[in-house]
Image 1 (cartoon, one colour):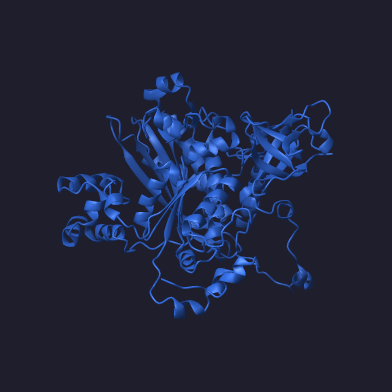
Image 2: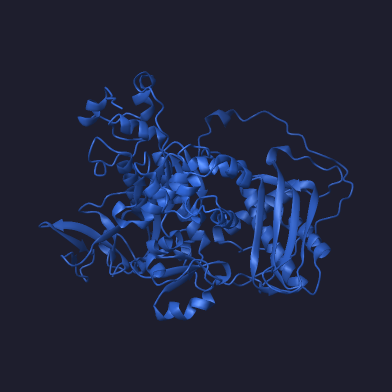
Length: 482
Length: 141
C-alpha cells in the first residue's frame, strides 16, 4: 500500500510530534482504502518473579535463581540459568533441593507484596504506549497496536498521545512496529528493571505464539512481529498443540489421537469437526490461528464483585481453635480491602477443605451468611464468620485450606438500616477508620483482634522471603555509601 | 511480632429494638465549600513518574558533603538518563552504591562526597550500570 502522509516531512524536520488522533483525523479513510490489519501485541515479563528479585539484588544477575510457591512447596519461577540446569516448572522443592544447593542456585519464597507492586509499575508503563491494554495476568498484558500499525504503513514515527518522547530512543523517523515494540521494551526495562518480551500478530492467540519465539531466540532482541507471515507453516508447525493458548491438556490428547500434533495442523483442521469436538470456543481458537480475530481485548477494569481471602495452611490443621484463628485473620484482611473500596457487604461465606491430593478422609463444606445489615466492621464480620466455622467444622479431618468470600456489596451512601439493629453504626465506622489509620501508619497487624490468635501455627511457610522492598519503610533496599 | 496490649471490645449485641432511628442531616452548606482546593500532596511534588520511582535507604556516610547521611531515604527516578553531575545509584560488583557521576577527560568517574573515600574510575573492564538517578533526599533534622 502506498500512502504518504502530508505531515511526514514536518515530523522529520523536528517539529513537535502531533498526537495520533490529530494526525489521522478525517484524512485517513479517504486515502487508506482497505481496512488495516489489526496488530495485537502480547507483552510478557521474562521469568517475572526472578526478575523482580534481581532488580533489588543485582548480585543475582547471570546466576541461577528460583522462586518457590506458597508454603515453599514447588518451583514457580526459574531464571534461564536455572532452566539450563534442568530444573522444571512445578517441581517439588524437597525433590530438587540437593541439586539446587550443590549447583549454588539461589532460592526465594514468593514475595507477593513485591511482585504485585512491580507488576503494577510494568502495566502502567505499558499503558503509556497504547490506549487499549488488557492486563491478562500479573506478568502479561495484551496491547492493541492497530493504530500504530496504521502509522507504520504511512511511514510515520509511531507515537501515542500522551507521547513518550525520549529523543535518544527514537532515531529514525520511519519506524516499524518492531522498532516501536523495541522502544516499549527498552522503556519498561529502564523504568522498572523488568525485562519483557513482545510478540505481535493479528490475533491474541498468534501473539502468544509470537511471544514464545521472541523469548526463545536471542537474536530477535525480545520482539517478534508475526503479522503477514510469509511462511506460516514453518512457524506454526514448531508449536505443539499443547502449547497453543486455550488448549488444555485433555484437548491436546484428543487432538493428538486424531493426528493433530502442532498448531499448523490445528489451523488446517476441518471446521465442522472442530466445532463438534471442541465447540464454538474451539472454533474461535482455530480461527485465531488463521489470523482471524475472534477474541477482542477485554478493556474493562476489573470491578470487584467479590473479595476472597484464603490460604493454604503451612501444616495440616486439625483443631477448631486454629481454624477459627485462621478464618478470623482472613476476615480481617478481606474487611480491610472492603473498606479500602468504600463498600459494605451483605453476604459472607466461610469454607473449609482437606487436601484432595492426599489419600485420607476428605471433607469440604461452605457456610453462607446473609448479614442483617450491610457492614464493613471487622469484629462484626469475624463474629458471623466464626459462627459459620462452628456450623461446618467436623473434627477428625486434617484441613489444608480455609477461606472467606465477601459478596454483594453496597456503597457507603446507601446503607439500608435494619430497624432492629441496635449497634451504633456511625461509631463503628469511626472505630474502623481509626484502626485502618493506625495499621497503615504503624504496619499491618499493629492493632488486631484477639480472635486471630498470637502464635498462628497455621501460617504459610515462607522461610526464604526477600524484603518487601517497595511496600515497607523498614525494608527498603539498602544502598552503600562506602 | 509481639503483642503489646490486648483490649476487649464490647461484644456486638444481638438484634434488639432501638428507641430512635436515623438522624437527619440539616443546616446550610458552608459558604467556603466553593473554595475548597485539594490538599497539598508531597508525592505530587517529589515524584514525577511513579512507575519509575523507588525509595532506597542509605547505609554509610561517603556522600555526606552532598547532604546525604547514613540512614537517609533517597528518592530515585529510573526514568531519568544519568548525566555528569547527577547523584546516581550505580551497580558495582553486584552492590547498589550511591555516588556522584562525573565525566572527567572523557572518562566516567564515580565520586564520593567525603574526602575519606576514593573515587572509582570506570575502566575498560568494569561495567558501569546506572540503576537510577537520585532526585531527593529525605533527611530528619
